[in-house]
Amino acid sequence: MAVGEGIQVDPSGGGVRRRTGVRGVWRRARVLAVRAPWALPTLLAAVLRLWGIGEAPLGVDEGASLWFAAWDVGELWDRLPATEQHPPLYYAMLGLWLRWGDTEAHVRLLSALFSIATVPAAWALARAVCGRRAAGWAAWLMAAAPFAIAQGRWARMYGLLGFEAAVALWGCAWILKGARAAGPWIGYGVAAAAVPYTHNLGVLIFAAANAAWLVAPRRVAWRSWLALQAAVLAVWSFWAPGWLEQAAAVQGRFWIPPPSPGWVSAGLLDLSGGLAHFAPLRGPFGAAEIVATVGAFAATGAMLTGVWVGRKDRVRLAVLAAGIFVAPACALAATVVKPVFLARTLAWILAPAAAAAGLGLARAGPRARWALVAAIGIGHALSFHAQISRPPDEPFDEVARYIAERTVPEDAVIFVTPLGQPAFDYYFRHYGLPRAEYGVPWSMAERGAREPPMTAEASAQLAARLEPHPRVWLVRTGASRYVDPERRTEAMLRQIGRCESRVKRGQLEVSLYRRE
Image 1 (cartoon, rainbow, N blue to C red):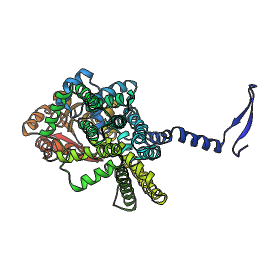
Image 2 (image 1 turned 135 degrees about the vertical axis):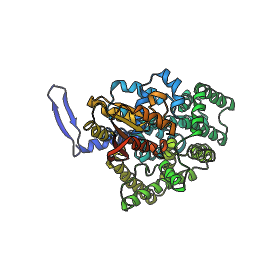
Image 3 (image 1 turned 90 degrees about the vertical axis):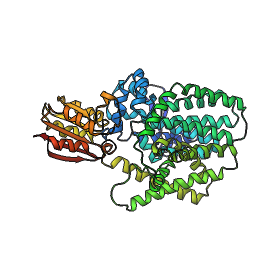
Image 4 (image 1 turned 60 degrees about the vertical axis):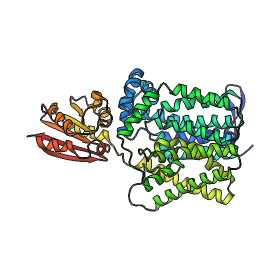
């Protein structure tokens, strides 16, 4: 009998049963790793995405998710194109999800579940184009990728988008390899058709799949492939008018800055599975930041190595190269017209990037492989620690408590960007205090604008609405610089009164003005 196992008599008379100890658990884990190599990475992904998922307060964008999730499907379909730059699918799903709870953890859990499910989907994609050994490494890389973890812990549509992209590229890979089974065709068709309803830049997934088809050898009849693409486009055509309206709004005014070399390089490191730059380690650039950056470059190097060593298989090269490079190249090319390069909107390329990095690790020599694994693992661990330990950027819970402890019924609360109002209300409602709230220049409930610009005319209208209120609380968020960069709101308030107090909580600034 092995050490760690014992014999225990079943008191019910069923005989002798074996009690499993440490060695037995280890043996079963090894069997599971062989029979279902995606299972343990998926378990790791669940731990990393669910660890303290409800501890941070909801931010501006998550408050916007709650706001739109409260609309029914008809409202989303009719009003969203003029209100928001994202399609309705995630908001509709979140609205159904919130019927079973609305705590911070529950609000974010929907994204986390899709992010967790992306790990076996990425394993399947890597298994299809890179082989079983590379797929095992890809699953671990996808589970621990800091950028994937960050998106999975955020109540936005990017976790869902990553899952859809992994399924679509998995189906595309098998189709290009000549698969006749229905699974890959249905998987690609459903996922590719859902992508444009999840994110407007999801059309780049469709572009990547067709770029792969153009490069890969013809193992599938072109009529069958084009019929499948026509079906996907037919489903997407129902949303095409809304997509065009949202694209026109983005073309007219949007917040993404022109891509600088630092912006692009940080985004590309994120997308290769490295350091999540929007959750950096605080403080000066010290040893921890250097190690995390080295880990990011190690992940990028493994990914590029995988693409290179897999170049002789045209299907593999087509799927990996198209899946990784088409979307960033298109986003950067579109910058000539309008800046749209933003890492989180392209986070779905993490699955093919993990597949390529898994192939790079599988083909590397033992010493090089474990050196890369050590660098990537330590860098990912530091990035994860930064994500869960950094103070919140938008602590609306603290702001709501601060105002609730000092407000009187005649006060008004205004938000320099309407997006701040839903997140504030999520916490302020618990105090049961009356208040008048206004967005700047107007509330989302009034005109539905997400980030409308503050003008002199709107400033005068807001001043008239504030006349009945002797005191006004002003809440500025990080997004206020896009709505009121000239601080017209503060100038208007100084004309009617004086600022009695001003405090900062993260990126939030709270000021109290008293009418004179």
